[in-house]
Amino acid sequence: MFANKISRVTVLISLLFPQLAAAETEISPANFSHTAPITFNDPKAVAVTVHLPQWCYFASKYQLTDLRIFNAEGIAVAHQLMPIQQNTPSSEFSVDAIAIPVEADVKEVVGREADIQLDIKGKIAIHMSDIPKGSKLTAKSKIAQWILDDPKLSLTTINNFRFELDETHKADFEAEITIESSEDLRTWQPVVSNQKLLAYFGGHRLAQLSITIPASKSSYWRIRSESSDLSRIVKIYAKTPSETTSVTEKITVDCQLSATKERVLCPLKGAQLPINSVQFNFGSQRVAFNALINTYKQVPQLDKLTSKQQPSQMLNGMLTSSESTVFKLNGLAIEALELMVQQGGQLGISSAPSVTVEWSAQQLTFLAHGSVPFTLAIGADQLVKRSEQVINSEWSTAVGIITEPVQQEPEALSKLIPKRPWLLWGLLAGSVLMLGWMAIRLLKER
Image 1 (tube, rainbow, N blue to C red):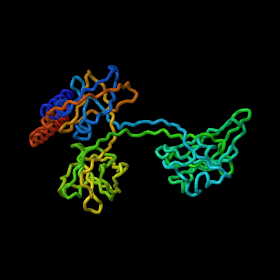
Image 2: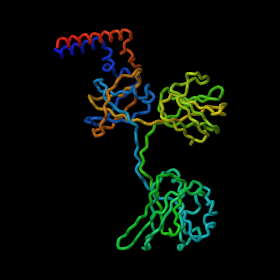
Image 3: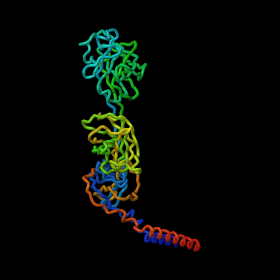
Image 4: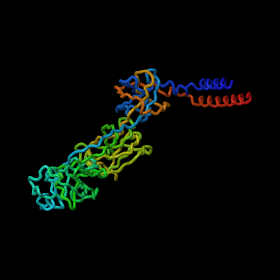
């Protein structure tokens, strides 16, 4: 009897509030502005993973929270969005180097001690490949230090140096090494010291010919020894650490210059994007000023600011026409950028720049429950509840492809919500009273 009464209560609630059930069951691809089929080759896969194409970020109205995956039966399946990570393995490369002798006249070889000469390309004039010809070094010269000036070094994080010896002579080798770094060849910063390089050629060869350092970048490196001869070194290798980096999406948009030439406004194509970095391009215009960058969750008016148009974040920094000037943002979802001079006044430009914005790329994984084809739908005018389920990495996963989207006029999800909220609240109050009455009756009957 008790179960029958509970069943009657459930039926009563569903009759009183059909809209509440519909809000979770009647949603379909027709409620979204953009749809696209997803294809994959493994029909037995439990889950499917796809790289989210760029158009999805601009079709979404709620930072991808209005994205759904439907099977052929029109049922939304569970899905996850995760930032895409890229793993770069460790690598090793040989570097250009110059040998500094112990007894040779340093000024003749490399210029003044305090200001080592560079060639027209900015490289140290004498390199390992040039020795001994073209310098004062001889086969008997003792080497006190090696200076590394390979152009790849300034762009690469290094965590290890490996040394190759001339083994035509099987004499044992031992040296105590100090490694230093510099950006201008004048000031050297110690990185590691008292490091041993060893090579013994006894009954069994024993060698320690690599030195690990804290991962760092530098334009120049110096390998030196106070007491040992480093002339046995014939090649030096630099090693990069393995890295995990985030894959990014980026887009360049044209900005607008206000009539007073005091503001630049850059709308992001009608989408709110979680921006990580910003880079302005002024073309042939030369600029250099202290910039104030404001971000907005809604596009403000170009020539008129109201009290409601408050920036969501503010960033200060020196801005030049160099393409290397990049500003880091905190990933807050924004719809527009604004550029001004910190102290106010005109920007000193005659035309609006363009801006390149960058954000983290997302990977979509969904459960392949139901029949193919599966459809990605995005761009709902309101959000509805979706099923939450963690995708297990041990499940068999196929790689899918999202084809070109189809744009459509979405059926408003607001149709699923009662148009008379006062009636909804009245029905809710009535159902609560009825549930209370039925509960009292059940207690009395027991």
